Length: 328
Length: 284
Image 1 (cartoon, each protein chain N blue to C red):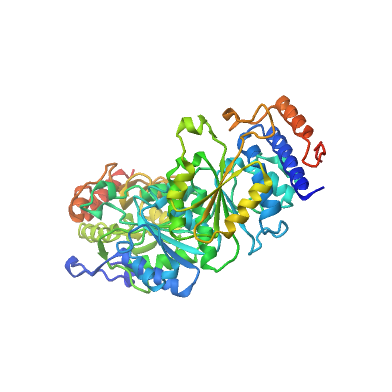
Image 2: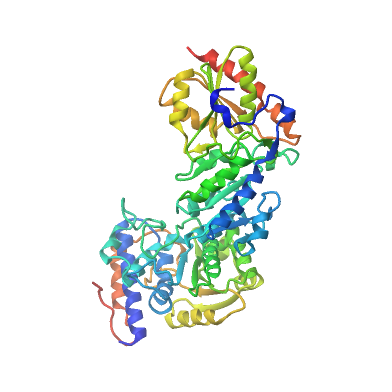
């Protein structure tokens, strides 16, 4: 591992890797911010257990609002609460929020600069057996396109917890997406996290891999595979989709000359799109995107689905080879 | 002048301002704003606790407009009440104006929500009222809706929630003017029985003549006294009220008058005799 990875707990044996659902970090984070700040309120659309909103609801019943299955109403109510000085966190599955309530998030929240924090749970294909209708693969695209919306895709549960704190402290709307499954606990309590900051986990000179969510772990595994081939990749965890840490990404791309992005999201419009846009107007560097290849998901186990649709370490390895092949 | 005479004078002035604003803008909505003049006059001059020169006064009654396209009547009422300089009204819809085509939160003193896409305002008002209750506040929240936006499902999401949570500090006022863009509401997608629908959702319903300031004021007072359920006031209005060639014609929903039409409209408004016998005439 490169010298910057000191704060990581990665081992080379996946079986030993400790894993926690990222949404657990949300559940802990909202109770912590709720304890510190009486303005924090939490709303949920009939999914308190699976979004981990339940602990807050039990701890602060007077500050918890059960909305029922009405995501548009939830967004509007949250806007109204925020206009009166509350800091609302609203939770549902990402397919429904921002999916169903995009107009409300656009006008009542983003256009109104409402201080609303949106949790998109069960994002990505690793939702599994529920199938395509419940697998949000477009949520980062439709949120980062809204002016003023911060978009975060934390690496693991601990980073999600930190993201909740950062969201509460941020003045303005924030979208935070987490998957359903347990993900490797890569970061620790002392790992850095900030809106607008990417974190170089592993240094290298031959290619840059920029990843978010569970693909950060896959990128680290890919890096080890490539190292055995004599290819040293720089792995950057990029939880801040918007605003993007262009400085860090550009410096790395300048050094390596070849970039791969990796996300549990369509290859269109998410992390890959953001990186390609930002780098494309600064330098001539190939950007190869690993993600869902313009396809809907389907039922299956998370492992089967990530493998079938090409979001694994081996896909990142192939992408690095392809990116390097494209370098003039 | 009697108090009612003063309020009618203000209402007539607001009507004239609406015509002139729309003419200057060259675009915008005529029918809804003209029909809602009495509701806005009643609210801002007889019902609301508010301070025009302290628009963010913490204890003010809150107003959330959901059908934001009728903002000309809101802007004109706010100007008449002292929130804005009257001269600013002629900047409606112009580049750089605070008076955007549909209201933008933060642009205009006295306006706290952005609106335009129908169906969103009642949810916002619910959130505002909910915060008021969480904060043990004594102020009221008024949500103004159009009738056609009841075709948006979100309206009913908010209505269902508000009644279940007994948000009795929330009063909705519906502009029941029976028109929408493609025609009369009852031909496009009928809303009746509207009163029964609100009652089925758990609201107490009052119905008033939306062109009568005393009736509107009385309904708002009655709503304040009802403590078991949130109250919706169905204000029966005449779209285009005050201008004979606009009244009850849905085609005036989203068009402004041209110069000749505006001149005729203003002439009609200036000829109206108020309740205490005076001719309104031209307002400065």
